[in-house]
Length: 150
Image (cartoon, rainbow, N blue to C red; front, side, top):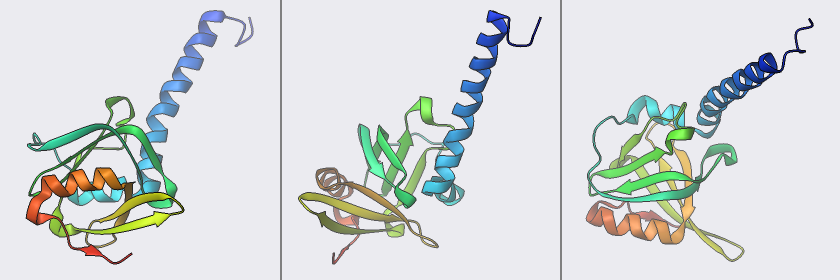
């Protein structure tokens, strides 16, 4: 019997390949996009107390997109980021204090966005819709970073 003649073996090999890919792609995306470097300083394992918005989207470094899989939260202390459980491999929850974030409004064609720069040493771009930035700003109150000119 050849290696791939058994239907059961084929199913097991395909399932193993899918699981291995799933577990490897997350950390690669986290490394390329900058989540992994943020996790070194801002990994968060406590309970976040503040407003949250689920199934949000953002773009990070090198155009790594997180579409409809983020939970983004904010309170007066900082910004909370978490990714949907299914995609969490290589993406631990983060909490970044406002003092380590800068903000800038942008407009590309007709699309209004905000770019937050996350982190002190090597700021990671975090691009979100303008209306989400407005909700974060309301939740942050006086702690919201001064916005830089576009």
